Amino acid sequence: MSTGQLFSRSTQALFYNYKQSPVQRMLDFDFLCGRDTPSVAGIVNPGSEGFQKLFFGQEEIAVPVHGSIQGACKAHPTADVFINFASFRSAYASSMEAFKQPTIRVIAIIAEGVPEGDTKKLIAYARINNKVIIGPATVGGIQAGAFKIGDTAGTLENIIHCKLYRPGSVGFVSKSGGMSNELYNVLARVTDGLYEGIAIGGDVYPGSTLSDHVLRLNNIPQIKLIVVLGELGGRDEYSLVEALKQGKVSKPVIAWVSGTCAKLFKSEVQFGHAGAKSGGDLESAQAKNKALEEAGAIVPTSFEGLEPAIKIAFQKLVEDGVILPTQEIVPPSVPEDLSSAIKSGKVRAPTHIVSTICDDRGEEPTYAGVAMSTIIEKDFGVGDVISLLWFKRSLPRYCTKFIEMCILLCADHGPCVSGAHNTIVTSRAGKDLVSCLVSGLLTIGPRFGGAIDDAARYFKDANDRKLSPYEFVESMKGKGIRVPGIGHRIKSRDNRDKRVELLQQYARSHFPSVKYMEYAVIVETYTLSKASNLVLNVDGCIGSLFLDLLASCAMFSQQEIDEIIEIGYLNGLFVLARSIGLIG
Image (cartoon, rainbow, N blue to C red; front, side, top):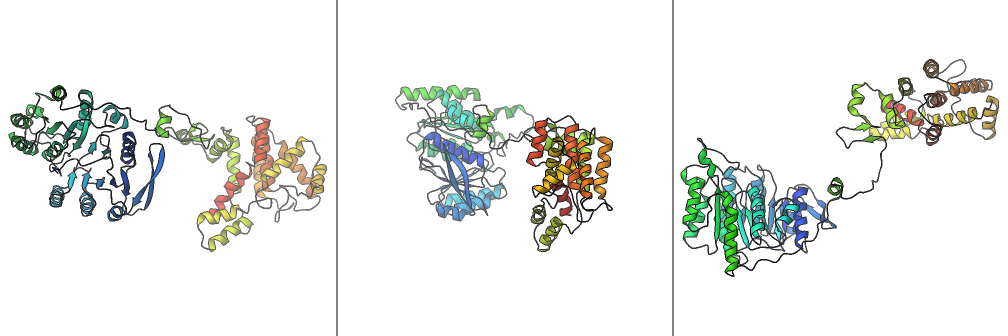
């Protein structure tokens, strides 16, 4: 521990238990510092293999993912830092396994609440094998301009504000990760900035102590001033007191132990961290501050006095020629993620897909602008939802009721029609539900359910051109085209399709006009004179009635009606309806 700095610009780490944000923050810091290679060599996700796509500046890189610690260490022998984001339950096992790998030198344990017995075992193993633990309950550490652990120092904006993209002259060690960020800001204001900072963690038994790191910082030539932030509870600060008394620390040390307000409380107080709980007078902040001051550290009278104390000490070192302040540099701009840039209004990006019917970006999804809660509260039916999603408007109730009738009446037509037969055969072959359904739907065509659109097209064209049934039917015959919507294999003049009768009865009672349906009935009269099975079937009935719905509800322009007929909306009714039966 006392040999010197832990990290450098070439340090690489293995990241255990993948979390995108802290990994990307490390890579952004690398780019900001001008590193040639990313600091994250690989990710360990037990049971997973592959890679994760992340950004190194503008470039998208693939960071390898390994299923085991041993495999990751073998694949990346130069990675000597292990950043452990495991939970407090599994932190011990994963940390111990990492320590047993010869390539791993430093482990940062992020989880708090690691059982004290486990922590003590890790500490003992690390000391025997000359390895370093940062944590548990730590955000990690940072060497300015070189390397940082996970979320240390917070956001990219804070890192730039604290000038951590280049090294300064101050070493810092603290128990608190949050207070570390505050002190990095202080150091940027009153000194030339941080060289290295470590948050040892707030648990009762930290893997490495304040004094461990102070002695190490003392041996780093670039560090000229050391700042220490302790807290009440425990006796870690007294080992630093002894080191100061014994003359082991040759550089100025400015120290403050937080928690002096604990004396104002009548009962014992717990201050956030597990270790921040005074167990007696010696563990109080006042006693520690006094001992540090008597040992030779610069100790202000309050936390507010810490910043001016650092400023005075730094200026004296500059005046004495000990510090030649670091020259300021302009860091490169780290590209902003597209999602955050769009959110902040800095860019506009074209979408790949535009939906004009549904939007789920707000508090609740909407169908054609109608909120989901409204659909439920107003007791909308399937027909209402279809009118919103297919036609982008709320059709009158008689229209949506007609849509629902079509679905109900066409849901199934027995097992012998081609679509049902294909579905059954596919099912007997042991295929999954979607495969069975698709095999049936692919059979839909002019001979099975796919004549609704064609019936609507031809009936509309003939009626609009005022063709007589004779002219219409004979012209179709001349073209070699069967009249869509006319003809049935079972139904006939004397055995009518009940579905057709029900739809016609409803339309005559509720539609403002049924001119297209009446035209289809006249055509049927003519075709029945040729053969008894040339009846108006359900496809022709739905096709002609949908023409009447669109034309008579006064909610569609002629152009919209022509488009709906042309692009094949109406067969969707049969596809939707028959899916119900095919699934059954």
